[in-house]
Figure 1 (spheres, rainbow, N blue to C red):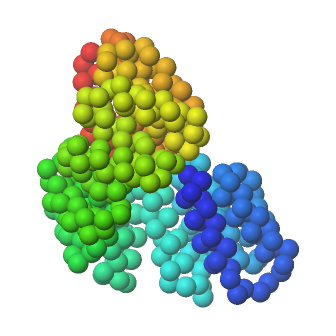
Figure 2: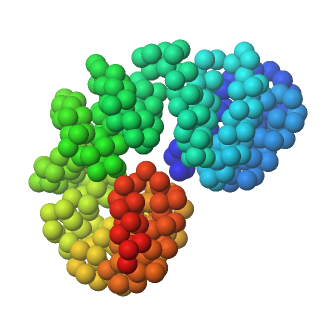
Figure 3: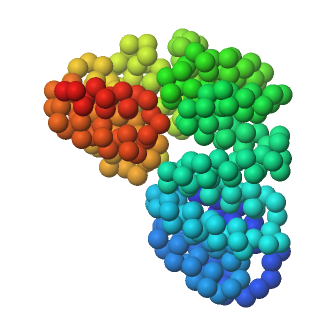
Length: 349
């Protein structure tokens, strides 16, 4: 989250480069950006509201308000703020309007307004039919809506001629998230072709090899990556997962345990430890690790932790708790087919 916010901070401040206006309002705006970057979302929102009320940098201020609302999961309020940003964006750059439109589409999707989000993607593609990012996002939205043919068409258009390994991996992960790994495998093969052109990018090679289930290759690449950079969090976490897939629970546990004090990855490390205990059938201990991981504000890790929590309660035969957890999970992640299957199973217990 913090890394994302820092990028947003740069974007937001640069959005005012070369502008004149009241210095006090500008300072307050930059203060809002700093608060956003450090994760003080409510204070950031208040700062941006003062800027908007001052009548200068209004479009930028409403974008900041929208981001503050978005990061606190207030999607309805985020939609309103991003709409107001666009309404006040006359004279702003094409990239500014595109940026806000994409945030609005994201907020619409999470506010259960997928059709309105799709309208935004359609309008952006009508302006630039070769916008790879928007094609990917629309494809993902189509897939989540059950339009697999339309999704594949968008993915293929986005992928045509692309040398962006992340794009192919992201497309694969859409298929994987819906249990359609085989359909996404062609995109993985393309990702491997791209990363193999760079002898130095060991994490990327390890990641693609992991998804291709070439675990020996993945392990070797990740060990090399960590040897070159012992603070490489992403390689550390992935290596732990690789060890688990290789049924090497002891080494997996050692990798995760070593990094639970690193606040940036602690939630994921606790999730890894929970998986280790689940692999060995110690579900009580696994639940302790899940609860520890959920104590951190890490939205990405939280999804996996919450899913594992359901599985743990199932294995503990605590069906009522598992059912309640599953019901909450499918509300949070309605397109997660694994979660839906767990919930359907639990409703019959």
